[in-house]
Length: 268
Length: 268
Image (cartoon, rainbow over all chains, first blue to last red; front, top):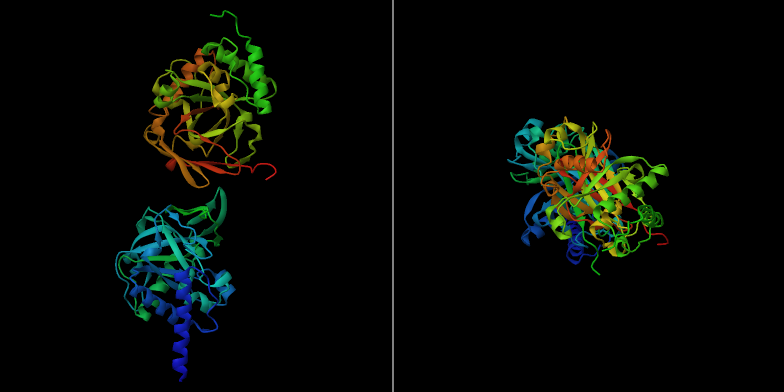
């Protein structure tokens, strides 16, 4: 058996393991025993994406992760990562999220972009984004890990669709030119009157559009560019928050409005 | 028909003690011959006992401000009660419920008076007297067993008023009272979930009408609404029971919100 075959087998095995966790709703062991470098991890993610598209899931956008310097330091990386958003992961503002819908859920408040046109250049400028972004929307991403106890390295989270679970978009789309200064936009997320996370736009790679630029260029390189209608979750504006059954989280982002993630009580 | 003049001072003491001990008492009208006018005399004596203990007048509340509630109670006028500083909770306060008998909470609009008012005033005078407006809640807590009473009973019991909280004041120079309050959506949220929804229009058709009503009712009682007093205009939705260990928020859309948290029950 060649080294190439061995690597392909490892990617397939890692994808199978994560697909099983997704289908059964039970976390599995990390996959870093099978894939260790980022390229291989993205191959696992890509394999899962193909598999899920084949099962009829509709690709509707991307999430960007690892956008804060603190989290990058923690994982020893100097670059963000990304994962796929499928239509079945989109939750309307305030709609009840069933218990168990996301494994080991945590929530983070983000700025989402909705694209009005494709981003297919090899290298994009911020001006390209001005033309392409139709709306800016407050969002809550419910991250989750299909890997037991969130015991993840960079390779584990990249392979696991960047630990994405579900996402909630606010219902108040704002055109980019009226969204104000996204770098200084304040964010508070509260639960039962307690502020559980606070931050600003600058926490996301200095500016949420910077993260979107990185994503747009990266995806062109990988051959599956961002298209009109896609949603981009640009990255957390503040610390992520563990979630328990019954929680209702409400995030406010200055100039953009608010969004709520409501988690159902456990079924008794 | 009994001609015995009710012992106003004794009845006021009964209700005052009931409130102080947070114990319900039988309706006054079960044993005393009380009409609405006498009810107000008892209310006055009741609040004077509290003022003698150091409380200070802080405003006035209106009750039965919706047509539905008036019909339900078989009455054709508003009732009112006195607000003191001791009844007021800071925005975001955490309160113990053991000071109440069977408290309920309802969403309100609060007005801040910038000049004294009494008697028959015009709508223009009412608008001119208001310097600020805020989202608010009122805690109502009948001192009567089963929260059941006749009209003279509830009036004597300070119209069930037991506490109130006011959110951030909006200066009328930045918030148009007439259009801004015409049909402001209001929700009462418990632990992040909307349990009652309504419109500010439910308050007398328009909450501003509470100012003219309050001035008229105050004049009938020989009272002047003072500068700096709060007018609680009335409830925008039905009241809901206030339970231990809850976070309650009145969300008044563009006007803002006000919060209260109740402590867990002792010994839990």
